[in-house]
Length: 271
Image 1 (cartoon, rainbow, N blue to C red):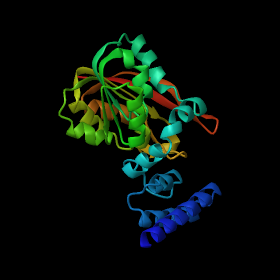
Image 2: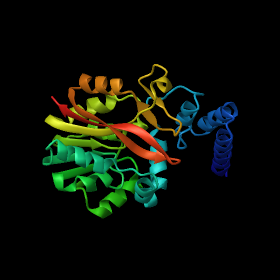
Image 3: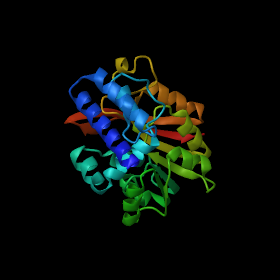
Image 4: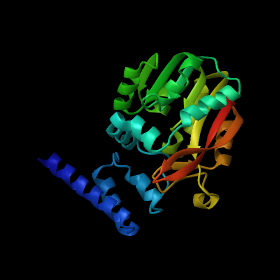
């Protein structure tokens, strides 16, 4: 009975916080989200990123794992339709086009970080002899498995996987919707470097915001609870971990409430 009571209290606090946020009463919403965090320290509802998006809390180094897993597991069955048809997400195909333009179309081992249901795996399927997918959301990985796009699939946090991996390194590493859930990039790039062959390509997307929105920070949380990064910070973090930037392309990452979300598509090479 106590657990049910705790769950009810959490649901009440979270729903109250959402309602207050939607109404524009950010101070009251912040108080409610603070209660949510006290009731759920693992932060399945992403209260910390919501606080940051309202500028009522510090910008975290990353979105909580429990939040990311819960968010994507809940939407796994309709993920492809919502992301591609409703939100206009075409980053995997944009990446395919860029690789073709660069003459990079043949890889021995591809790693797809944050593989989800396999949108990037499908877009690059004919370019790699062997494909590994990693995602934190188990329901997403199950759908990717059903599509048969990957030779190997893991349910794991991207950085945890990279730090623990003992398999052969990769010559193509993709992360097409990972950075919006990470703030600090050094852990990701450092772990990626350990799993990349010399000359390997690291390809990923990021969201951007006007310079003023960063308030001097290298990354921040935007109004839709996703992280954005300055191009200067991304370049610096890449170079510090042994990657040279091949190109940065301005793209529309997706649409949100009918508005285009600006971002970048990076292609970098391991030295």
